Each structure stands twice: as structure tokens, then as C-alpha cells.
Image (cartoon, rainbow, N blue to C red; front, side):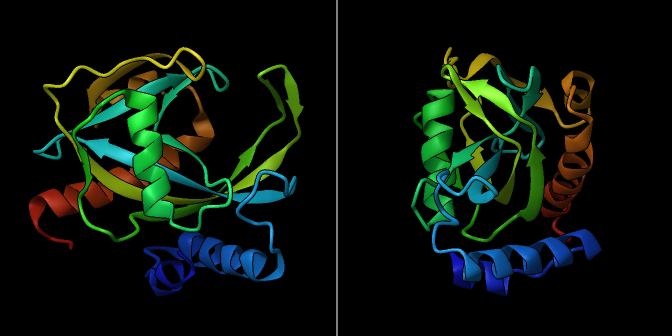
Length: 189
């Protein structure tokens, strides 16, 4: 994971600064992959798209009360792509999900406000998030994981913004969707 993150080419100043901060934090904190680090920890997310790269699968997250991407905590696993795939299978119930490639799609440091999860208080902290592009079979029926979500469905990348209630995530999704658009148009690898 660290080598992939080091090799990642940021697309803007935000990613450049977040990448450096992530690498610095990981280098200085042996527990950066674990939730036991209450300040920050590595998470892996996925933009799950259909085969034609024109729809995205988003879930309505119980904690954030908003539609959003699929992903989760690394919990000690340094292979962010493996974690993103595992989370995609667990959170969607879909069988046919594959990486578009093994390259990082985006990096972001995301502030998570305190909340209650499974009856326990979780303090404010940062997610050092690595995102991948995954491709799923749109004809497969996704399954809601009631512990995590209240709904999961396919959206066009334009209409999904109508159901996102987390303002802080809109710039992140906008950036990632622009990258997917470039891939679809063949202007990016």
C-alpha cells in the first residue's frame, strides 16, 4: 500500500497535501492501519461503477444519513485494494465486482464527526482514505446490509448529487467522477 501511495500522482493541490500528510502520519504511527488510533487511520473506499462507466452504485449510510460510496476501515490490512474489494462485496452483496485496474483513483483526508456505532461512542477522527475504481454487474441485484445501510442503488453520476446530504463529500465525489469521465472518454488511464 505504501509504495502505491508513494507512486500516486496527485491531480490537484488538495491531493498533493493530503498524500504527503498521509505518508507522514503512516511513517510516524505504527498503528495507522487500525481503528485503535483514535486520531486517524487508513480507510479504503470504492467508486463502484457499471461496465459502461456511466452509473455509480451508492448506499444510504445509516451513520451519515446520506447516500455515499462503499468502503471501510483497513483494520490492519495494508492492501487497500483488497480492503476496498472486500468492503464492496460485504456492503453490496454483489458477487461480480472487479477492479478497473490496480491504480489508486484518489486520496483524501476526511474528518469524521463523533457518532455512536453499535452502541459505542466513536470520537472525532480522520480517515486517511484511498479510493479505487471498481466495476460491477449492473444486472445483479444489490442487497442492503441493515447494520450499515438503509438502501443501495444505481444512479447516473449526475443524479446521485440529488441524494447526497453530506456537503463535505461533494467535492470529493466531483473530483472522482471527473476522473471516471476521463477514463470513459479515453483521456486518462
